[in-house]
Image (cartoon, rainbow, N blue to C red; front, side):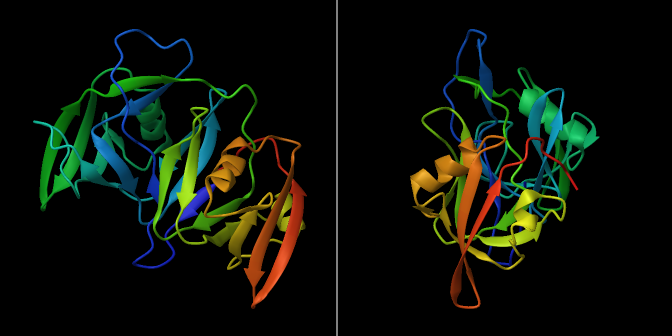
Length: 235
């Protein structure tokens, strides 16, 4: 899934919530925390699969927000331009950031000055999903939204305003079911899109599962049903 910017005031935000520091290796998946609450990428984010896992890469150099002000660490509005020497928008950078277990070298732009930061993440264990994540085949633009960690340890999205469909993969089941760019997403599997239940429905969708959306289109509510695809694609 790709999340894109809708308008200057609309921001797509990405993960990195607060995490507890742990000393032992995690038996399951690991959540990394580099000292900021969330990231904004004006052009959005794209999900892709590599090494049997799903990753999220930036489509434009990301900007960090709500930093903790740790010595030698990030400051609010730092723009990340490179990660371990790879362009911040590359797949390689996305994999390194997600899989980091030790210090990571960041190149950042701060007030027009290029700086080099070496940041060691805090790590928190979380339980991996037992099933393969699905590919829903559409992109959402959201204003006043944020990434959260669900009680299950999965990543999810919390919307404070109804998100808008900004892109539909033409080869996806959602496209065949009639989902269109510009549709305003009001319900996800019977849950209002602003609720925690809707966030969980998005995060926990599995291949082969029937997915139901209620979208507002030209002042009418349209209901769309499709079967979630099995493999994430970055197009």
